[in-house]
Image (cartoon, rainbow, N blue to C red; front, side, top):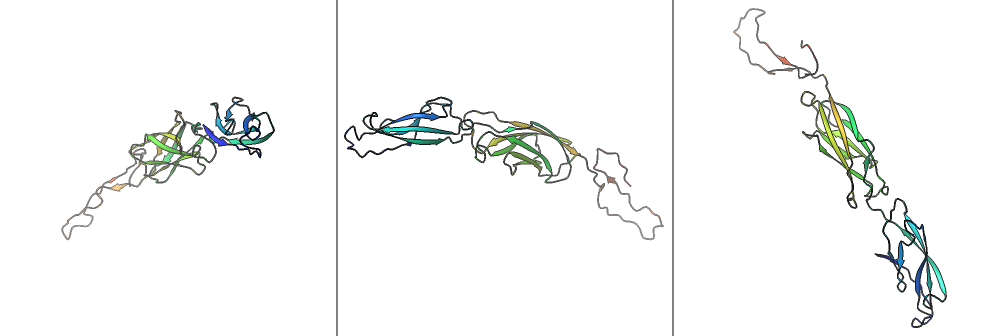
Length: 244
């Protein structure tokens, strides 16, 4: 497709060969992946892409030497330079540097840091094709976790958003995917990381069951008369403890 036009002027009569300017590409640097990546319209000076295979990550810029000549290209001439900068497309998917994590998190804490998942991306730094976003796609059955993009834009940070309960769930196995802000060009694989979260048991206080009792006793009851019996339950199931 056409993306730029070069123009040369000639002071001669434009209706004669002396005033009609023709254009040609003399050289291309770098000559990769092919030596003739571009084409120029001989009369209009419009430049278009001729070949496929451009890759910003390998060849981010091309320099074309262009000649403009009258007399149907055989007369007086002048040269000019066209510098072409290749813009980035999202052709490099983000990849987790580590695809498996095993972490331990104490129960009952909201906002606890669970894990930082770092990724790499070969696209232009700072572009939407480089910045990342994250999703927990399975394993968070009670919506206890959140994953957000970290300040480096190349890390996913998982935190707890609800207090974990060791007595209910001792372990979570989260599957996390990473994507770019821009859509992929073509079909690219999505990187996935597995985060195994082991919930740590924390000593919790026993609880009376029930908490309140209403009792009636006659007046003048003897000293040491039993008034009521209270029962306490310890929610900790992973430890052997004595309630006193």
